[in-house]
Length: 484
Image (tube, rainbow, N blue to C red; front, top):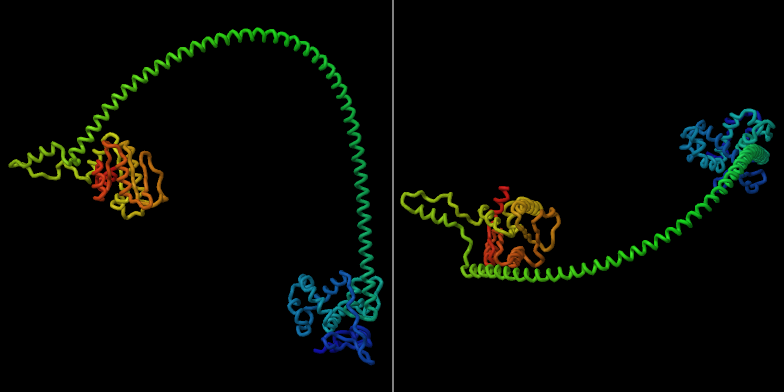
């Protein structure tokens, strides 16, 4: 739609100047090369259009508010595309959120401004007509007059805007002056209040000064009394010092007598300690001779027992003498056949384990995974170790024997419960098996000490038997743990 489209249907028809709507009555609006309006006359193109004036902020806000109010009343095709979405906003949001777009369209689109002007002038009534004629009623709001002048742009509209700006600035200056006067009055009021407070405080200070002077007189009198008391006290102190020096001389003489007596007592004590030392040395030498004789006797007995055991090379017996008697009796005619009531016990019998653990200072060595995989193979390794160590703790508590459990492993594993009292948990080092560690433990024991090794590994059993240990199968320990 051309920007020069007449808008006679929007304005009254009585005044030719009002029908023109914008600018001077003799000017016509046409589109320039860039789409912006240019002013032409009968003699040809006119000078470049003057730039938009700088509007006071109240005038700019009033222009935006007037335009936002008439946006919904315009047909959709007469509303520029950027403003069609703004026209749908709520009235309280339209002017606030759409202000930049509205201002830009009023500046860039003279035809849109003419359509808005027609609606605004129609709503403004007599004031709008007066502004179109280029006059401003004296009683009219200068901001309203400037806003209507910017939209209608009659002759002298820039002067109307300038006058409005001057009026707005005058109002602002008046407001500033009024604010300054109000602040000055407030400061004067505060100063008067401060003076009254100062007078009250001065009265209080004078009263306080009188009270302090009175207290000062009392303190001076007390000071004189204290000075007299101090002099009397110092005289008594001098007398006491003289008495103390006399008593100190007496105490020094008594202390010297006591020190001399103490030195004599210490000399006698030293002589007594020397005699006691000689007596202790004699007794210790005599006890050492007796201990040497006793050790030699026990060593002789022990070596004899070890030599006899090596000479005989006997394996642990499975039957007691009474068992042989029972077997011989069973071979006589008419005797009952031997049955499960025989007292012979194999290496998996928990009763044999109990017998060996009853020996003095017995040492129980357990091949850990050999036992757990045979008895608790369905569990994880961590659960197997935990269950075995817990059961061995019960055995150690019942028998008081030393218990050592050995597991295969290059390094100490995580997840072990705290070892019970009397139970030692070992892991073989890297490059070493649990079987080798068990044999080293057996070899480290003194000859003659009962060492019980629990393992179903035949190689382990044969190896420890050669070093004097008692090998038992894993089932004997599993049955013993199940019984507990």
